[in-house]
Image (tube, rainbow, N blue to C red):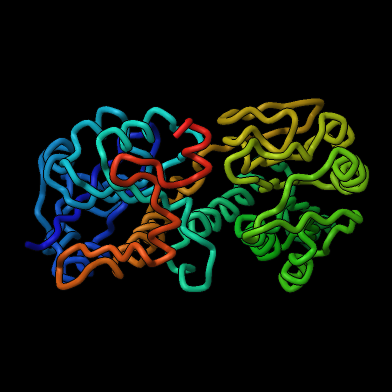
Length: 374
């Protein structure tokens, strides 16, 4: 019997993305799967029901939850939604395992199989499945637009009859996917851009985008392409060098994050107080506690003339493209498990093995199992 793949209208506050776009729904149908979608699921991302072909419509989320063999989601399911899932169902999406203990336990207790897109291994073969990267690119782009909207200056240099306007100075902290996109966007808008990352390997990437790399004498290359946490001595040395560059910046965009841990504090209160009045800090890491000491998630505040912006869930603000990218990530992840319309997961495949969060009544991701006591 063909596998039934379901998608919901996201219920999380302010979430506008959808896990299944018309493009991917059609591809799944061509793979022999049956596609079941809650009515209106894509409307907030500007994918009307009429754009979907070869799908079956459900009038409620409960109808999808109770029928789908595989459920594709953006945000983690609620406890109520988990309780309504069909026995033996497979859930694929962002699970936030470090922050959703009750939900992970519920998936385990119901013996449901779940795959967390945050856990997809960073290997070459899985690049097309890397949802963290696809959504981070959107966040980096949007962060620069937010900085530009709050900054009471032009980003590019302008030569006018009233004189020459000097370009704004933008400092990007963290040169992962979000940071590199922020650098590229600020450069396109004409700003003079500096960037810093504790991983020395990013130096050439920063320079290739036309930005200057800030040298602090501190390197923290870590495993899996992430940065390791700095020691107290390294943080002090880094802070001293960065504070001087922060003081000169018109806009600072911070993107540094350590998976499963609070975001490292890089921009201190003292550093903010050295910035010029009218300067802006946009802290992409606000949801993880923020890279700036003064950041408050979801708020915009002002401190001694400097505006600190703590945006949350930036990808949803570009819901159309974010949904396109995320839905393709899900399809690329799921396709190897589809054989003539049926689900056949190869548990020897490291992508499935490493991204599996729960299965057969157990938490398969060791760090999560340890944190939750098994």
